[in-house]
Every structure is written in C-alpha cells, then in structure tokens.
Amino acid sequence: MHFTTNEDSNEGLIWLLILKNLTSNLSTEASASTSSFYRTEDGIECSVRKRNGDLIANCYSESDRMGNRRWTIDIK
Picture 1 (cartoon, one colour):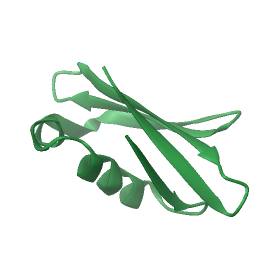
Picture 2 (cartoon, rainbow, N blue to C red):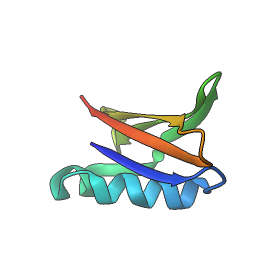
Picture 3 (cartoon, rainbow, N blue to C red):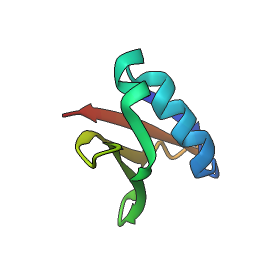
C-alpha cells in the first residue's frame, strides 16, 4: 500500500493516513502509544504496533524530489 504526503507533513497527519490505508481490522488494533516514528538516513519511518507491542506494519518514506514523500506500508 502507498500514499503520498507533503515533505513537511507532521506525524499526526501521517499517522491518520497510515490508519486510513490499513484494513479496518488492523487500523482498530493499531496503538499510537506503542507505535513509533524514527528518522533514518533516507527519511522517516514508522513501526505500527498493537497495544501489546506486536508489530502490525513497517512504514517507509522516500522523497519524490518534488517536495513530497511517498510512503510504503509493509504489513507483517
């Protein structure tokens, strides 16, 4: 699954877009308190986790060189 955001989008907006792109079952299991955003050399990534800490998905972003970031959701 993929979606695109502006380069300067905040984590709150990105989190909402991640939830929107997950299936309804997975989005209800996702927990903001156990999930995390972190910076890498290539940009920003997110680990989406359940309340118990189990990994649901990894989300990766990369610059499209036009002022946007393309996000990829890799469901586990």
